[in-house]
Image 1 (cartoon, one colour):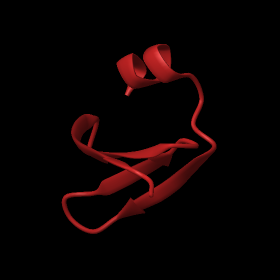
Image 2 (image 1 turned 180 degrees about the horizontal axis):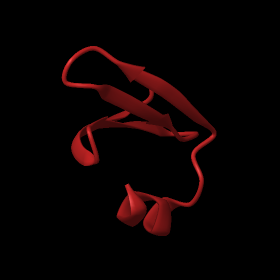
Image 3 (image 1 turned 180 degrees about the vertical axis):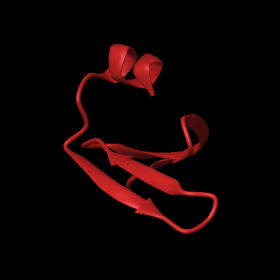
Image 4 (image 1 turned 90 degrees about the vertical axis):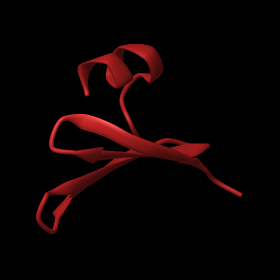
Length: 47
């Protein structure tokens, strides 16, 4: 999470963790980053 924040800055929105394992989403203007615990699992470009 620290590396993402260092590369891209603060996200517009940090959505609360959902499920088990906990999945957290950080929303940036052009993409969303998905985390499982502290690990990036994927990122998705917005249309």
